[in-house]
Structures are given as structure tokens and as C-alpha cells.
Amino acid sequence: MSTTTSETTPGAPTPRPRVAAELAPATPPGRGELRAAIASETTKMRSVRSTVWTLFATLAATIGIGSLIALARTSRWDRMSPIDKLTFDPTSFGLRGVFLAQLALGVLGVLVISSEYSTGMIRTTLTAVPRRVNMLAAKTIVFAVVAAVVSLVAVFAAFGISQSIFASKHAGASLGDSGVLRAVVGAAVYLTAVGLMGIALGTLLRRTAGAISTLFGFVFVLPALVSALPSPWDTNVGKYLPSATGRALFSVRQQSDLLSPGAALAVLAAYVVVSLGLAAFVLSRRDA
Image (cartoon, rainbow, N blue to C red; front, side, top):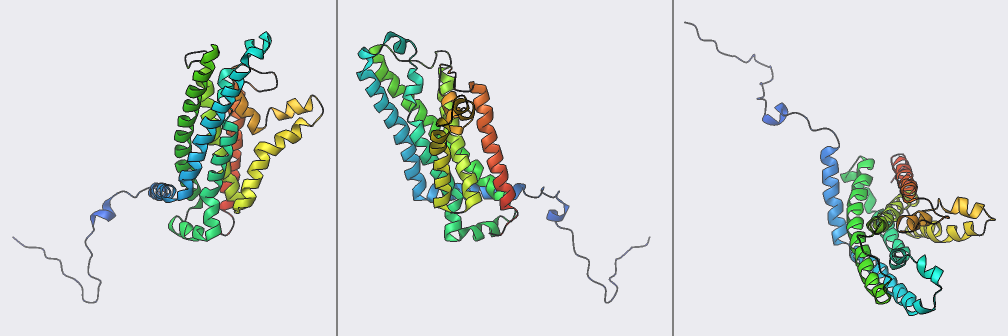
């Protein structure tokens, strides 16, 4: 019986044992990086003081303004005409604070990325996450989750408080009424969408002041300018603006100057997808 031995030829490199890491299947590129980026962005958002204050402002504006409007409407209820009472939409009035709260969440969306450009931290972020689209995706995902949770808490609280005020005149609504739950959730969807557009503007413009000004003009000033157009252009154009889609989403009663809730949701989603898509395209093709 013969024994076979392996000998190393003089001068040849010593064979290296194959380790488990080499034998394991490769992780798809970008997947682990995205998970790490999401964890990092979660830590950033949790540790920045402006996040807490901005989210608190969202809650205060949505609940506070909605309650004040409910009190004002209730105080003049007995002087309202029968037609006004018949067409009254308590859900929409109780959620009017969304129009101020959208600015708070929009500002937070801008700050998520523009603050890193202003401090130069964006270079460190892009070094840690070389795939820029992954970086933007991580910021978007983390922000969307936080904004959606806070928005849902705010709108449901505003709805509950405002309807308890309207109940004193037997004019309140309940979540079980037709279209009410859809309207309340629609208000949260609209708030989250405005914040996501803020991220897109912060990415495109890089400057906090410029991005916030653009967002403010888009959701507040542009509707006023469009309303000055001659009829029927004011209605035909105005109903496609973001603020009008928001009104359509959290209104129970269908209005002739607004899109249907389904169409409004589609238009709002298009705003978000197009703006974030453009932001990703520009981000991946220019220097930090």
C-alpha cells in the first residue's frame, strides 16, 4: 500500500485554506448597504432636536387649529342657514389644521437632507453610503415611517376632539359614517406626501431656505395665483394642485371644484414619485 503526500514545490506560493466566507453565497450588492443606511438615518432622526420640535408642531397645529375651527363653527351654528347646515362637512372642518401642519412636516422633510449639505456632513454620509440612491432611499423610508405615524396620531386626535365639540350641536360625525375613515386616513397620507416632497426639494436645491421657500410657494402661494385665473381655468388647473388634492382626500362630501378621492390620491402620488425620481437622478449625477 502506498501513501500519497502533498509536497510544495520550492518557490511556489503556499496553498491557502478556503474559509467559510469565501464559500458563502455573495450578498446582492446594495442590500446590506441599504439596511445599514436605514439604521444610520434612524439614529440621526432620533438624535436631532429639531425633529422632536417639528413633529410636536405638526401635532399642535393639526389638533389645535382643528379644535379652534370647530369651536368657531359651533359658536355660529344657530345663525347658519338650513342649506349650510345640510351641506356641512364636520370631518373636513375638524381636519383643517392639516393646512398649517403640512408646513411643519414639509420643513422637516427639507431638513432631513439640506442640513447635511449646510454643515458639510453630506460628504461623510456619501462616503459611508457610496450608492447615492441608497442614501436617498434610506432617508425617504425612515422619514415616511415617522411622518406617517405622527400624522395618523395627529389627524385621529384632531378628528376625535373636533367631533366632540360638534356633538354639542348634534352635528358631529363618527368613523363609522360613510367616507369618514377614508377622509381621516387621507389627511395623514397628504401630510406624509408633503414631507416627502420636502425631501425632494432639499435634495434638488441643497439650501434649506431656498427649499422651504419653494415648498411654501408650491402649497400656499401657487393656489392663490391659480385662483386669480379666469373661469374655468381657475378650477380646471387648481384641482390638480397639491393643496387641492389634500382637500379632496380629507373631504367627505364631493365638491365640484375638486377631484374624486381616488383621482386626487393618484395625482398626489405622481407628485411624490416624480419629485423623488428627479431628486435621485440629479443626486447621482452631480458632486456633493
